[in-house]
Length: 405
Image 1 (tube, one colour):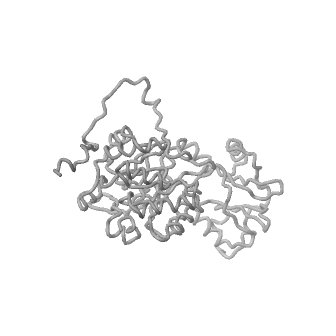
Image 2 (tube, helix red, strand yellow):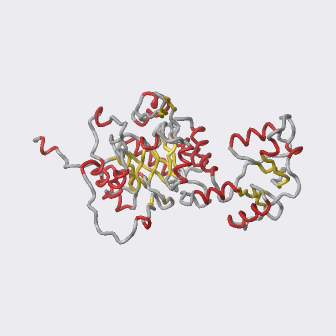
Image 3 (cartoon, helix red, strand yellow):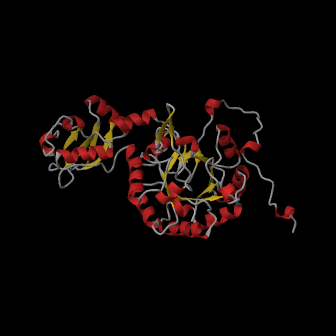
C-alpha cells in the first residue's frame, strides 16, 4: 500500500479558512448568541471555560455563568474540595435560597463569624429546634463585638423581623426590602418555619447580569471535570449532591475503552445527569461515546495553545475538520459539539461555530483573568498569571495523570 492510500483526507484548521460575507437582514444588535448545550442547559453566550487547574475554579465559574456562559471546575483537588467549589457557585446567586445557612440561639459569636466568612454572606437567620424563625443576625450585629463566646441569642434581632410567605416573587420581595430598608427577607410558612431566604444582593445581581445562565431555581449553572479513576463514581455523587449541572469525563483520548466504560457507568448510576464525553476527533468516536451515554461531545486532540500532543505523540486532526466530522454524526442524535482548543482570536470562535460547534471551550484566553486561580507573577513591573497544561508534570502530580495514563 502506498503512502497516498494511507492519507485519510485533506483537513483544515482555523488559519486555513475565512467565512464568505453574505446578505443579512438583521442588525448586529439583533443577533442572538443563545446556544443549546443540552435539553436542560441553554447558554446565552456559547463560551465555556476549560476544566484546567490554572483556569477554572469557583470564581471564574461564577463570572462565566453571570455573563451567559458556563465554567467547568477542574478535578485536580480532593473530592470534598471540588464539591465545595461547585457548592460555592450554586450558592452565589439565588432566586430564593431554599436551604439557607442558619444558626441556633446557642451558637457562639465566633461560630457566627466563621459561618459568615466561610459562605461569604452578611447575615444568618436564627431558628429553633423545629426550624421556626426566632431571630436574625447580621454583620452589623457582630462587627465590633469583642466577646467571641457571647451567644447569638444575646445580640440577634428578635422583634419586628420582616418576613414574607412562599408566594412572594422577586419583584414583590424587592419592594418589601426597599420599603423596610433591610437586605434579607426570610420566607416562612404558616407555622413560621423558615423555608427560604431572599436577599437584596441576589436581586441586584439579576439587574446587573441579565444574561446569566441559571437553573430552574435561579442558581448559576456550573460544570465539573472528572476522570476515569477508581473514585470517579464517588466524585460524581459528591458533585451531584453539591448541585453540579453537568460533568465532563475528561481525557486526552476520549475514544478509548476506559473512557467509554466510565461514561457508561456514570450514565447507569446517574441517568438524568448531563455528561460530556471527550476529547475526540472522528465520527467513529462520536458514535461510540453517544452509545455509551454522552449527550455532549468535546472535540480536539492537540490543538490547544499549550498542548504538545501532536508534537509528542504525532496524533490529531486539524480542528475545523474534526469539528465538522463529529458534528455531522452528532447532529443526527441531537448531541451538541464543544470545540476545545486552538481558539486564539474571536474570529476562531466564529469559524468553530460555523463548522458545527454549539459552543467553544477556552483555556489560555481566560487564564489571565482576575478570576482564574493561576498564581500571580510580577515580572519587570508587569503582572502575569501562571498557565499550564493538564499534561504538565505539576498538574499530573496534583491529580490529573488519569487524563493521560
